[in-house]
View 1 (cartoon, rainbow, N blue to C red):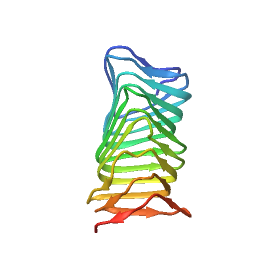
View 2: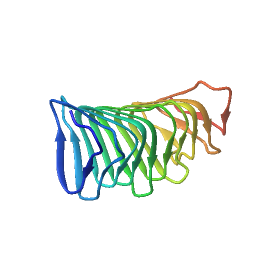
View 3: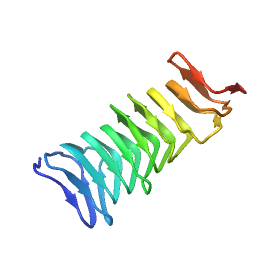
Length: 193
């Protein structure tokens, strides 16, 4: 178990078969990679983790108390990443696939690329992707608040999308599943089955 802050400058740091806690603002710089292995747990308790490199979830658990600010790559194929809020900046790429799990206890501001190609993503607050790209290929996405700025026109077969409020003025073709838990749907919706 470690304390203090973590800075990965270059190369790869793997946390596996242990639990590590970090209390200072931490970062993965461009050229660095943080891997959370199958039996690893990393807890960041300082309020901010900046990622300009790569974070790879390989079966372990990553917890961020505060904000994960991503301007690099986050790959979640297995394991679980939980954060209070997520800021995926313009050069940020987040890929959720396989059996991976992404949980955001607050809001997501997506100005980069967020791809869900398997696994499960849960956003307790709002997901704003007006300046970014949200790709739903398969898997599930649950947004407790409002989903805004989507740039797709079809919910594919194999995708389960649950939102509090869907806010978009475009037609939406549904081949998978769409559940709206709020009071209104803004914009026409066309169901194909």
